[in-house]
Amino acid sequence: MAKNEITKQVNKIVNEINPDIFLFNTLTRKKELFVPVKINYNKSSDHIGIYSCGPTVYNYAHVGNLRSYIFSDILKRVLYLNNFKVKHVINITDVGHLTSDADEGEDKMLKGAKREKKTVWQVAEFYTSAFKEDVKKLNIITPDVWSKATDNIKEQIELIKTLEQKGYTYFVGGNVYFDTSKVDDYGKIALLDREAETKSRVEKDQNKKSPHDFVLWFTKSKFQDQEMKWDSPWGAGYPGWHIECSAMSMKHLGEQFEVHTGGIDHISVHHPNEIAQSECAIGKKPWVKYWLHNEFLVLADGDKMAKSGENFLTLSVVENKGYSPLDFRFFNLGTHYRKQLMFSYEALDSAKNARVKLNAKVLELKNKLEVGSVKEKLESEESKKYFNNFLEDVNDDLNTPKALATLWELLKDSKIEDCEKLSLVILFDEIFGLGLRDLEKDDIPMEIIQLAEKRLRARKDKDWEISDKLRDEIFSKGFEVSDTVDSFKIKKK
Image 1 (tube, rainbow, N blue to C red):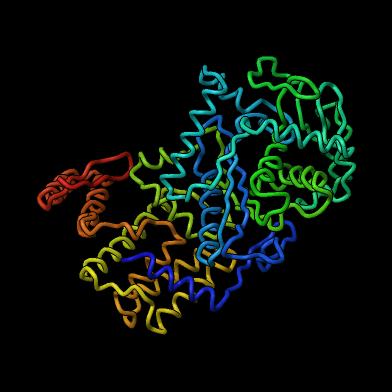
Image 2 (image 1 turned 30 degrees about the vertical axis):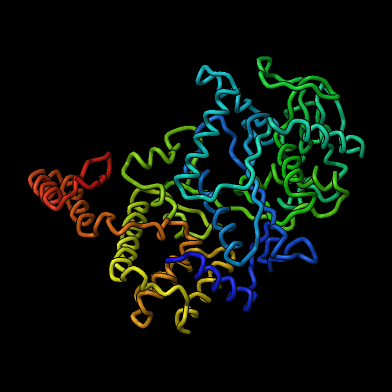
């Protein structure tokens, strides 16, 4: 298939119908029509700005963390499908983040360095590379900008100086604090009742005028072995966590941009602090128009995934159990990003099986169609109807579960010609990101996969005789099956 031809027609269809996009804005707690910041926005030249809160690189990202980046990837793909240009920034937090978002607890980077007996810089480099590898495996489109906090110390210092000049800071105990009492609507995104919160919270930093105040720059910290320090107007030290996102987003996207994404855990502290310092710095005008947050990935007992304890599951752990990273991506597509996603290997098995069936159906369509017979245009009204329905699904606050239902409905519809059906499936995968366009005709046949699954069940039942017979049958058909902890891998002989 020639991607350019179908893309041109889809672009034309989208331009003609000019579809609406609706996104749930955490700031207003309602679904809103998406409208770019610029009044005279020009799709042919202007970009939609997206900033996503990135990882703190002191350990591997767990699969709960990775849900956030699959979600922001879907958002970006939906905007692309609607003919928008996008500039996407993801930050890398390699300094300043304490284990509590509210300036309390251990230094996360120092914690990682002590655990591994490495320098903080070595830890940051290793886990940044590991995170980028996970992003690649999950077929997440690489952001336009990876922005490291340690590469932008100058910008953070300049932003703090601006806040200081405008009277929003105070210096005490060797540290620069942001004074939240100067911001009338502080905590608006969290629906924060400051008076009630102040009465209920226990003050742990005696230098703070209010428990909601936060550190912009540390020169005095309890970590005497802090490796990362820079000169500043307030003394040698390092930035607090919150200031980096404001400084780097404005550097790359301007003082006002469209979308900021993150997990729901950022709503209570990190994002209120970002908003307060940013809007005070730029003159109390709206900084970000739409705030989108994904829900947690949780375990069967309701606990969220965490970087400590037995529920710390990385993508590599999932792979070692016989799953493809794209199985995990497919698993995420089946639940709306604003709903909790319940993780279990049984649920991941279901996602894997569904993806296997989808791949098999796509390969079946490819095998039925001779080279050059695929129509590169959506000619029938029925095919255009499916595209419009799909576009409506994903434009309704990124409703991937409904979009998947539309995909399966299309695959079962005998009224759609195979060539147009394949064109639509490949087009839909521009959102799903499952690599369907690149599936090769010599991929593992469905028959072999079913034999391997039957053998896996025999192994679980400890029926070794059946298991061996099925292995030999698979081998006789030109494939080798190998065992993993809970699944299998297949390759051609």
